[in-house]
Length: 378
View 1 (cartoon, one colour):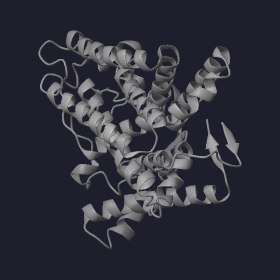
View 2: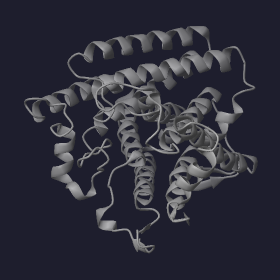
View 3: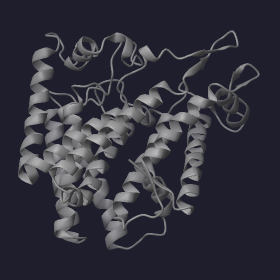
View 4: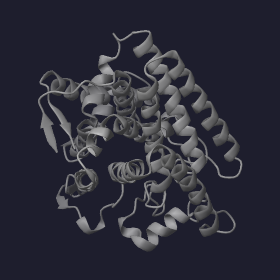
């Protein structure tokens, strides 16, 4: 990881999209209480789609979009240097994800004591781990297969994942929570101890097998970025992006009838839907920012977009640190929610206000870093 004193010239729409994604990530991950969350700010229970299900794949799309602007410079250094950079970056991001899963390394017990976290039982996968693996797969694909090969690889990957899910899932319902091929592979390869259990059973929504279709979100962002570089900031470019998004969304909705849109197992129909929607959002931002030159509102999101990894990591670390701070026998977060936010609004609105306030706290850290020209990259 390096800290740079300045940034290179950026593509503003990309920075805004990245910042918007990080801001939404913080909001949906940090309600005042999980007992009171508006429906759109929750993931779909299983099959289906909410705006929250758009956040993570949008970030993967942005990773690919940014890659399209940096790949040529990286490739120019030669194959050996390229591979070293890609594998080093992959390992670092993956290890940071493991660190966040283990942090803060102790937990508060009911008796008022603190006990060390069992590091042998921490979750192996997670958001940053998926970003790392998807980045690695996509970087290798676009490097060795180039544009046409990347499109072919993406189609094969999505079809292959559908086949794997169908033939290796339970016969009755191959796309069920307990019977899908994603959880079966993770249980066989990792075991239940080191798998996420937030769904009631050991099942990881960032499991190993579903990383394959998720990598297509990164490739989609890369292809969109290359098209923008080729055609420039023109209305024709925006038109092309809108049309491409329409095709992907239409195919996704058709595919949904046999391979349901599902974020938690990252189905192929879900990939096409989220890539299509990401392209539409990027096209809208280009229309407003690059063509209409309406930019006075962008700085708020640029702050998030300039230090996305460190701000995302801090958003998780601060929440976990708050669990160790006790006031009147309860954690700092529930104390703040009960004594500050619930005093001003109904439970649902108080929970949302807390999430927004927490997002603004993370933004203020990003603002401080940006003012001091501190940009952390991996």
